Length: 628
View 1 (cartoon, rainbow, N blue to C red):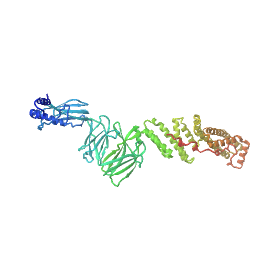
View 2: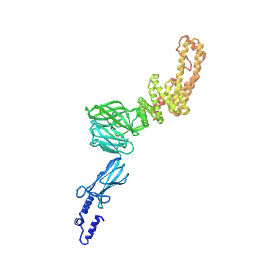
View 3: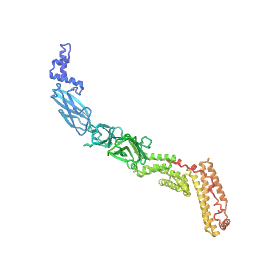
View 4: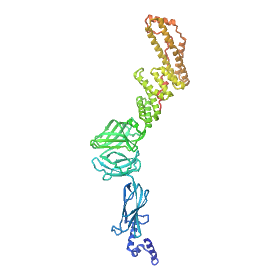
């Protein structure tokens, strides 16, 4: 029977004789002094809180662990309690028993005012029970055991830096998982998950650190993760596309020019500044230095508050890494006091080679549409460099075909603007032809590439080769847009060039030959060899214009060209050259030594330049064929 039962029984017994029962008065008059002390402690304990058994005492105190405290895993924990008697003498006979409940361990810990135990990570509850003379009082405390890492922060002068904030984050995350502060001695401990790699960073207003962050993992025994602090501050770091636009980019691509901007507060002036992109790969930090193009410093007149704008080039080395990654932008400063410190962006920048291909291609197309052809060509060249360094070239083949085709169009458009027969035009036409030819090597049925390759040959003066490509297109697709009219133009150009060359050859024969009959024979042979292909191409051109009218019936200029060409064909067919008359012409010219006079032969009178042909931009618009 416990004390409470005794009191109730006493009250019940006395109620038979008394009109009421006052427990407090009964305790004072009838309960012995030792029992009275325990009852007094019980009432005080009820004011302080409740226990599992319903018995607590202000006289029982758990000194360690404190409520909700955290202990490092793998290290011994000291469990300590004390019992303070009602008399205040500091000693109380009896026994303290410790019991532990938790996710990793449950059961008795031991007896005594102090016990020791090494625990694994987890949530725990420890109970201390004081027993004496069949009376028990208890206290319960919750605590946690976690994996932790440790380190120390000191200044360049060797002093400890207290109250610095430590943040542990997942790689690529902004919000920290755990935070802690350095103590007066600069020491810190911060919780860390047991597996994986994490970013540990230090920060404090007015300071920058080296390193500004560390890639850490839990280790046992622990490895110190120390930082060095400099009384300098790098703030407002951003990565922008232009020097005037402060909007941060979200994608970094190789060989692009970008801008790094930040503010720096430091008494010693910076001696050197380096910007780099940093990623984490398999628990190891990898950095890619940015190549500085120029630096534009806008100082306020003081060393404090200096704003820095750096123009940088993202190196091609980015391609040699993973095709998908996240980077942080880091700025590292070395000052005149030989201190080195750094800071980095909290946000990350994506690198995705597939997205870079598409973005760069889109940039090139935008330049090309707006007539910025040289910029478009330079942009398309970047894609070739991307592919040259990529591990998997095949995945970019479709985009490269678009880029190569568009670049060929840009070269072709630039060539058209250059003087005919000039070296610049020939050079650009050769580059255009190389791009279209490379497309046909990988895809022989690329009719667009074939069409523009034919046009390139035509502009270069090789009309026979141009006609060949147009014919190959029409064999596959008889109604292919523009091919009929372009082939007709190539045929007329061939006729013009062939007659011009025949006249040149005849002039040379007249100068070199002295026998009239022999000269007449050679000239007639030369013209007979030319007459058949000229007539065939004239008739072929008529057919091409006729077919073109089936899809462009309302185009009056096509009708006019076809009609003029038909008249020329009929006139040539109705004319005949008499060999005797022709020999007399040659004899008279030779007698007069009039070698420059033209011979009156019907074939030599053909002049296709008199036929009205509509402008090329109405036949085919290169800008309208840009692939995207």
